[in-house]
Amino acid sequence: MSQQDLVIVAVDGGEPSNNAVRWAANTALKRGVPLQLASSYTMPQFLYAEGMVPPQELFDDLQNECLNKIEAARDVAREVAPDIEIGHTVVEGSPIDMLLDLSKDATMIVMGSRGLGGLSGMVLGSVSAAVVAHASCPVVVVREDNAVTDETKYGPVVVGVDGSDVSVKATRVAFEEAHARGAELVAVHTYLENQVHEPMAGAILGDEQWQQFEREREEKLDGELAPLVEEFPDVTVKKVVTRDRPVRALVDQSKNAQLLITGSHGRGGFKGMLLGSTSRALLQAAPCPMMVVRPERLPK
Image 1 (tube, one colour):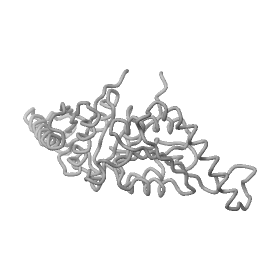
Image 2 (cartoon, rainbow, N blue to C red):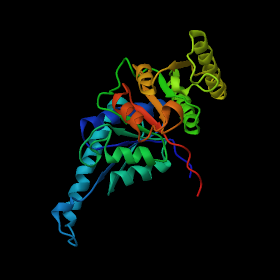
Image 3 (cartoon, one colour):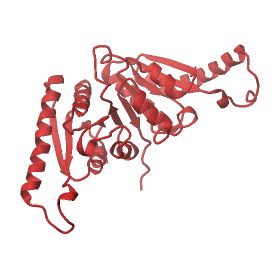
Image 4 (cartoon, rainbow, N blue to C red):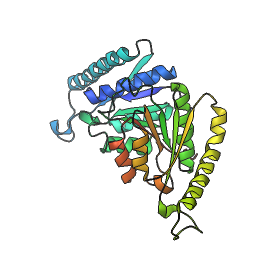
């Protein structure tokens, strides 16, 4: 199934959700693609005993409440990008199911970090965890303190590079985002002392040996980026190789960035990005919106 050029943003009516709508509208504008507002509603189970059928009027009220949130979000998006095409989706059922289904045909899903109703607890809650873990397209989490400002809206795109297959995909997405935004790309590769391979492992290395090791890492990073540098000649690339933990290095490089991109998991310092401590730390600590890119799905 081919994906459309479409940015989808989850809407729940809260201000953090509105912040995500603003970011998504700005992204749709920069990409020149439509924006789709998505919201869902569910019947509160405690209101009716098992087997009882709620009246249609209650379903209508819930749907109308959802549509009102959509219209309010549309006004928020228009403030950022008056001329973009905006559609909407309102679904009865789980927000997880809705977003995962929509992700099959989207460029990206955008979610606020904290919200109301079914979308609450977006950073560490079940909705965000499930969508980040299983979406068919990249997922962007916009925390409520990640508002687009004059300092950040023209900032760089930052990507963590570790050489894994999903990192290769994330790096391509990062080049595409930097190209669409006219932004600098900062490619960050980290390593720790316990990742030094033989014959250096276990040895006490001097400055010259560390410099040699770093040069080797820089050459490897150059090789990994070379095809994309050639494909996207308009993208200015800054390469950062540092002996540091990935969370600290990526947070540091993401100050004043407009987007941080990582693979959902990888090897080396980025292993366990999806469910481990690294991803959770970045989702809470990154000073800018964060995109998680999942590996390609294998055909069944």
